[in-house]
Image (cartoon, rainbow, N blue to C red; front, top):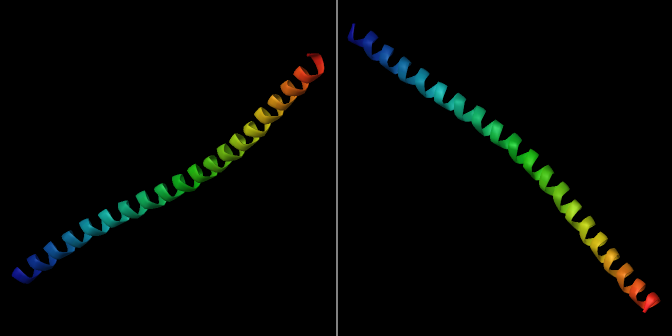
Length: 71
């Protein structure tokens, strides 16, 4: 009887630990997916920032040319 009780306690503890590890695994998978998504978005933003910098430089060059032509 005592042996059965010990085995029952061990099985319940094992089930609880397994459930916790399963939740941890799901959470880490979810976080991994979010990390990939955020890295993709960051890459897009960096490309847009570079394009904006080129656009701003082109605008400034056009202003300088305009001032040289009309002054």
